Amino acid sequence: MSINTQAICDLFAVPGKVAIVTGAGSGIGEATAHLFSKAGAKVVIADLVLEDGQRVADAINADGGEAIAISCDVSDEPQVQAMVAKARETFGGIDILVNNAAYRPKADFFGMGVDDWDRMHAVNTRGTFLCMREVIKVMRDQGKERGGAIINISTIGTALPTIVNNVHYDSSKAGVNSITKSTASEFAVDGIRINAVMPGGVSTGGAKKMQTDPSRNFVPKGPIMMPGRLLLGMAEPIQLASAILFLASPASSYMTGHIMAVDGGYLVG
Amino acid sequence: MNPQFETQIAPMFCLTGKVALVTGGAVGMGKSVGLAYAAAGATVVLADSDERVAALVDLPAGVSARSYDITSEEAIATLVADVVSECGGVDILVNGAVVNHNKPILETSAAEWDSVQSVNLRAAFITTRQVVPSMQARGGGRIINITTIGSVNPVLIGNGAYSASRAGLNQFTRNCALDFAGDAITANAILPGAIITETIPSSLKPRGPGADPTRHLGGFGKPEYVNGIALLLASPAGRYITGQLIAVDGGFLIS
Ligand SMILES: NC(=O)c1ccc[n+]([C@@H]2O[C@H](COP(=O)([O-])OP(=O)(O)OC[C@H]3O[C@@H](n4cnc5c(N)ncnc54)[C@H](O)[C@@H]3O)[C@@H](O)[C@H]2O)c1
Image (cartoon, rainbow over all chains, first blue to last red; front, top):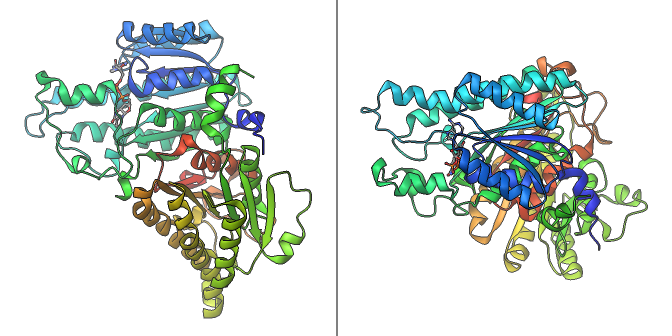
């Protein structure tokens, strides 16, 4: 039988929506920005590294989409406020936020200084809070009818250990899960849906750098490195981006407060 | 429509050439999901009881219905064999059939307990066992079980037999994910919240803070609210998601 593209479009398209994706200069965020654009959204790429963000924005614009890149450290309150204000000003509102930017350096449990611990929580946990606070203000302003969708990127490490030397990271992301549920409950009345995605192993620039950058002196060890432990192997960023689009689109209109693993079966393996 | 959507996004969610078997397919969420699969290009067989199949009218092209006795192992085997021979195989199985006695635990007889488990858990096992060889032969498949948020958190009083059967199906789902990952078969469960369907007794009343509709998204849900996740899980876009229990509940579980 013939496909009804309109039926698929009604579920998964986000035409005219304005989406902020943090950390979209690389990896999962980059794939998400591209996918959102193809699904009809205008995309704001907020990344610490402006040239990476700009490269992604340029590619989207060259492809017929609409995107801007903004330099932003998500852990910095004034920078987040300025980024959200600029996004709103440029595209006239905000409908979707993906908190994807993350700090990842591993640290030995005993050797880790409080600055390592604090930086991790500053970017991953505080950064998620700051972006949400500024964006939810705008979404509430726009009214319940328009509502909004927020997707926080966590990790399966919050549910089951994956690698060692990652205690501070898993802790910072467990905070993200918790923020997801608390805010989902608090802002459901405003028509704002808030969910999280827990990736498993994804081959991204960040993940490769983590393993190959000699200056980090990091050899990944732990349960996730066991052969076959990721039942369906490593994911490509598009697999995560698809789930993120699902959570941003009308296809998930009755979902909030859910933390969804997209992990190729790690959590059952 | 954005032309890029048509050429690049639609194919990610498209089910052309796929065959879907949906049990409990004549009513509620099963029917809704079956019709959504057909709209996405699948050939769909809705399986249900005689009476419910007889009441189905105006099925769109690509959708057929079959009646069978879900409590009979032999009838399930015949159903699956017929679908495989007529449609060439099965790629997507939705275990959507369900009964709900909604009785206080102290008044539930052993026979009632057994009949709830038989439809809600045993039949899903038998159907899965019958269907998986066809998926293996076709190089992959998707198993999607529709359970309930009551399987992880009690939300209704007098729902012990039902919730236990659905909790069993959740764990069976996760075991299928593990056992069949090597065959590129994924298995996930959808946990609907307060979604109103024809088969839910109107006597059911949610309890606790979750019962306050201002605490979650838009009050009671409609069967079509699960179409999006059901299509994601069945489509190329969802091939890396397995072993998940996914709540579609308007935030009921967290409120
Ligand atoms: N790749 C994996 O295997 C994996 C597994 C679990 C979770 N995750 C999560 O998925 C998300 C994306 O991961 P990825 O592998 O695509 O990452 P990546 O390292 O490829 O990209 C991350 C991007 O975030 C940006 N960034 C870093 N710190 C920032 C800051 N303070 N402010 C703004 N931007 C900042 C970086 O410049 C980079 O462009 C992260 O939240 C990560 O924790 C990834």
